[in-house]
Image (cartoon, rainbow over all chains, first blue to last red; front, side, top):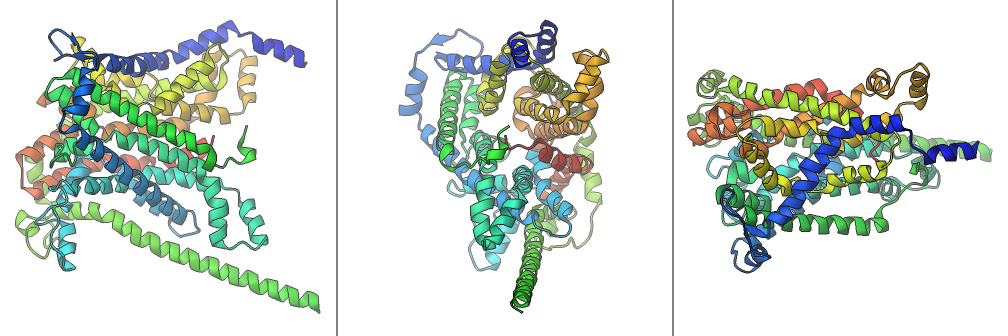
Length: 305
Length: 293
C-alpha cells in the first residue's frame, strides 16, 4: 500500500498537470508580466538616462552616485520615509492590538464596535486626506481649536517640515482597521485550555496576558508588522493628494520622489534608481524581521500540519 | 468539616474572580466607547462641516452641532461636482477589475490547493514571495509598457492587471479556503465523472463562496483607495474617477471648505454602503482562513 502510493506520488498525472497550468495561466502571466519582469526592468532602467522618448544612454552606476552625493533632497526623502514608516507601523500595530484585545472580551455590541474601528479603512484615500486637512487647518481646524482651548499656541500640522511627517503618520494609524480584524482572528485562535491551565496554576490576568496571549500572538504580530512595514515604506497617497512632498522634504517620501522624477521631470532612469534603493531598503527590513523571527516567534506544536 | 471550608473558600474565590472579570468587561466596554468616539470623531466633524456655511465654519469657537442643517449645500455642490459621472467612471474600472480578480484568484487558489503538478512548489514560492515585493518598483516599467501599447488614458491599465491572478494574497486566501473543503467531496465528484474544471465549478466554488466575496471586497477597497494608479494613467478629464474628480474640485474651490466637505462626504458614501453590505464577510472570512500558517 505504501509502496503503491509512493510510486503514485512520483509520477504526475498528465491531465491534472494540464488542468493546473490552464487554471494558473492568468496568475503566471501576472507574476511574469506585472511583477517579476518589470522588477528586473526597473533594475536595468536605473543604469540609463532616459526621458521616455529619445535615445537611452547607458550611465552605469552614475544615477546612484548622483543620488548619494549630489542630490540635496535624497537624504531628506530617505529620513522622511523611515520616520513615517516607523511611526505608522509601531503606532498602528499597538493601536490595533489594544482595540483587538478589548473587542475580544465579552462586551456588548461587539459587532458594532468592530464596524466602527474598521470603517476608516474603507473610505477612499483622497477624501480621507482632504477631511483630515480640514481637521489639521491652522486657523479653523479642530485640533488647533483643542490646543488653543487648553492654552497652547496653534500648530502648523501640515505646513511645517517637522510636524508634517508625524501628522500624516497619525492618519495612517487611524486608517489601520484592517490590522484589528487580523489580530482579532488571531486572538480567537488562542486556545482557551492554555488560559484555564494557567489559571489553575494560579497565574493572574496580567501574567496570563504576557505568558500566554502574547506568545500565542507572535506569529500574527509578525505578519502584521511585516505587511504594514512593506506597505508604509511605500507611502505616496498623502503626498500625492495633499502635501506634494513639502514643506521642505517633510513629505517627500521615496515613492513620491520616484513618481515626480519619472512622471514630472521625465527622468525614468533616475526615478528607477530611487525605486531600486527603496526595494533594497524594504529587502533589508524584511530580512531583519525574518532573521530575528526565530528568536521571538512562538509556534505552537499543534499548529504544524 | 475541612472539606466544607475548602468548598466555601473556593466558591468565594470563584465569585470574586467572576466579579473581577465582570469589572474588567465593564471597563473594556467603557474604553471601547471612548476610543470609538475618538475614531468616529473625524468623520462626524467632516459631515458636520458639510452642513454649515463657510461663515459658520470660520467662527470661533466652532459649533459642534451645525446651527442650521444646510442640506442645500449638497445640491449646490452637485452642480459643480460631477458626482454621478465620476462614480460611473470609477465603477467602469472597479466592476470588471474586481470580477477578474475574483475569478482568476479562485482558479489559481484551487490549482495550488488541490492539483498536483511539476513545478508547483517553485511557482507557489514565486507567488507568495511576490507579496513582499514592493509594487512601487514596477510602476515606471509598467507605465512605459502601457504607453508603448498606446493604452495610457484608457481604463485598460487599471483593469487588465487584475485579470492576472488578482494578487498573490488573494490567491493564497482562496487556497487556504479550498484546503478546508473536505477532499471526499472532490473524490465523490471524480467518481461521478467530473473533471477538474467541473469539480471547481460544482463542488469547490459553492463551498468557498464566502472567500470569494471576501476577495472581492478586499479588492474593491484596495482599488477604491488607490489614487496612484489613477493619477498615473488617467489625465483626460472626461475619464476622471471619483478620486481624481475630487482632487480637481478641491483645487478649484480652494478655501470653500463647506463645499469641499460636501464632496468629501459624497465620496465616502459608496465605501460605507459596500462595507455595510459586506461587513460580516470580512470578519468571517479572515477568521476562517486561519492566517496562522
